[in-house]
Length: 332
Image (cartoon, rainbow, N blue to C red):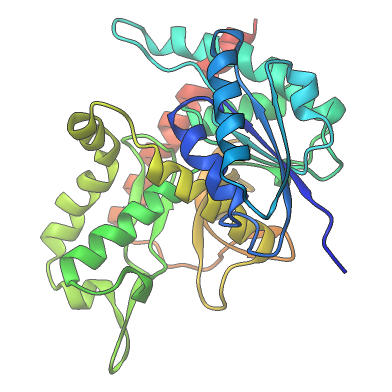
């Protein structure tokens, strides 16, 4: 029997990431090659014409899985009955702007979208926040959608996770698919901590630890970390635009693993509600290593944390606490 279409909302759909993301969703990269989709695209009024153009292109691509397209500037219409929401739209930081200015703009955007999702989305809708500051935007969304289960609101750190995998595979000259279980701890910002202490590489003689194969702790504890932390800035410098293709691809990876599960023995990084695991204060959306099964994520427990890691994990938690109080000061 043919599957019922899944309704997927993409906000900021006329922007760079949205434009890269919607064809990936329509080709099955997010929900699988046999799952039909209806894509809901939302953008602001000044982008209405561009949004119409994206809809035209989706129709022109004649994609077999695509069962319908809703393109709108009306947040209620956009959120109606959606099963998955990918929140790409947000207010970017512009030259001369303070963090508080950006935060207050995003608070007002996420306030409107949260209440529309809460009232009009399908029950058990899964939400992924991509727009920066992603962790704190996700927290704001929860604040204004109080009946949404905490487990259904996440933010994107899979891009950082994939960047870490990419750096290890380049360094060791191995296929990226043979590297697994890197971890991104904390905030999707330059304080995040990319951790390879539990990561392994599949070799002809079995799985080996990344640390053992790289055999250069100095590189792993310095340049590797800063390269992953600063990768977004390096791409802006090279492209004169921020990461779009890789962000869209990792958003698909995040939702695909959340909905369809993670491979046995493998974990991924997701920004999720802290329950106090690893000494991270509850009430923050923090990136942890997670496994997913039957549409639910669980934080991987029992990983050994050394002193170096502890300090990095606490520093990024401290930044998230500061961001949270800044965001909450904008609510008043």
